[in-house]
Amino acid sequence: MKTAQRTFTDFNILTCEIGTTGFMGGDAGHGGKTYVKITDDGATCWSITIIDDKGRKIVIDQPRSIIITVLGDAELRTLTECLQWAGKEVKKLSS
Image (cartoon, rainbow, N blue to C red; front, side):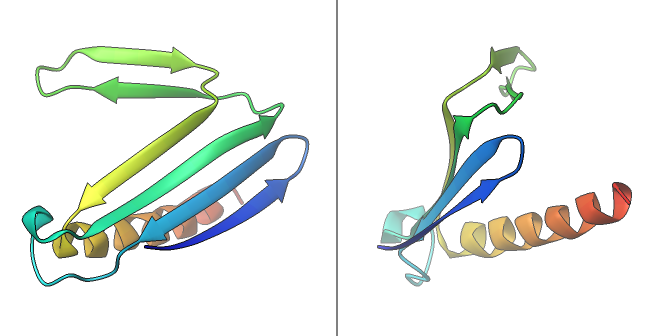
C-alpha cells in the first residue's frame, strides 16, 4: 500500500494521511483498499456524525482521529471525485 501524509497548521493543527493499494481490477473482494485518516494534532473544534442504515445518529465530539475506508476500484474513483469536489466547493462557498 502506498501512503502519504501532510500536516496543516493554522490556529488548529490537522494531519491528513492517505493510503491506497490502487486499482486492483474489481470490487472489494479483489483486495483494493483506500483510506483517508484525519487526526487532530491540536486545538481543532470538530465533531463527527455517523448515520446508520436505520437513520440512527451517533455524534462524537472532539474525536482524536477519523478514518474513512473504501474497498474496490469504483469506490476509489468515487471517493477521489467526492473529495476533490468537496474541496473546491468549500473554497467557493467560504469566499
